[in-house]
Image: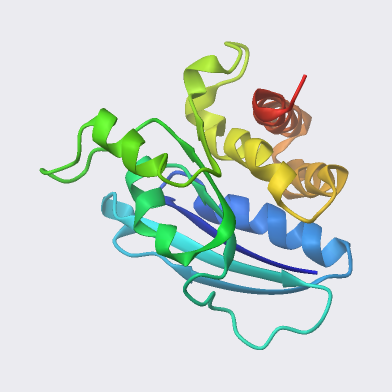
Length: 192
């Protein structure tokens, strides 16, 4: 088993939190992991991305070669497009439809969606479809992780345990809110 994941977005969106949840779940399942992060100008709305390589055998490099990513998880649609050349032909792209417009020539929504949909294995999650009981502004990253979880070779329960452990020091209310966000993201893409 070998899974290569790129997590992308804009500074402050919780990219590194997603990486921490997945990495902790992988380690707790006796898997090998390598991780690399690029923070860019994250404090000024710049791009942030993390490469996660997970395997049941040792991994030599922490960077994913072009064309070898199994999954892109992106909290910003334009950032998702930035990394599509890393995807394998059968790789999945899971992103939101909510732009973070931080450049003057940001493409219009129709153009962006058309580009994203060129990959048949694309899930574009609209946070407006998530129940109002979930704070989508605060938990968008965990919602998106839930939506991407069917494409991660780690049991869903292990990801939930990792969320529980990662947020435990913040109190039970924060743990419960993040678990609810993860479940809402999972349900948004689950087949009835």
